[in-house]
Image (tube, rainbow, N blue to C red; front, top):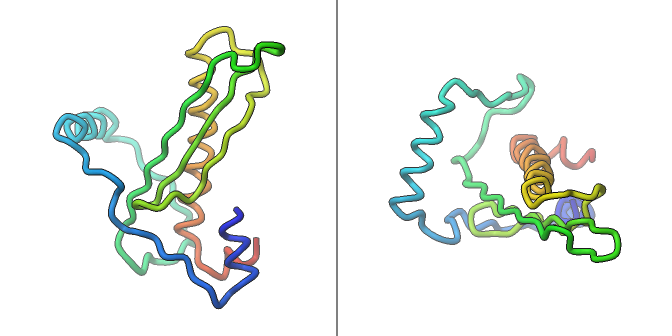
Length: 137
């Protein structure tokens, strides 16, 4: 949101985004991606009918997340971390103490994944929206 706010405040400025990913995907990861796509081939992306037609090529979005289970020794709450890359450029990064106490690492990781999915939905909406709609935010 800070980046979009900056661009709104200074409309004559620009943000250059590197289109290429930070690292190449090796053969094992590529096979996992293909297998994952085949398992959920029925899944479709929900696209608003009012979105404009894309003017450029698709950009690769990578989202990394992790949690530190029971980081706070007093309250027992975990910490979630998320970083979003568009191509090779980090766009969103945040670290947040989780609102509830998790009794397992699985629960803490699941909470971090929820935060990452929320960021994915937000960034996909922002990338598909027109610049005029972003300026209204």
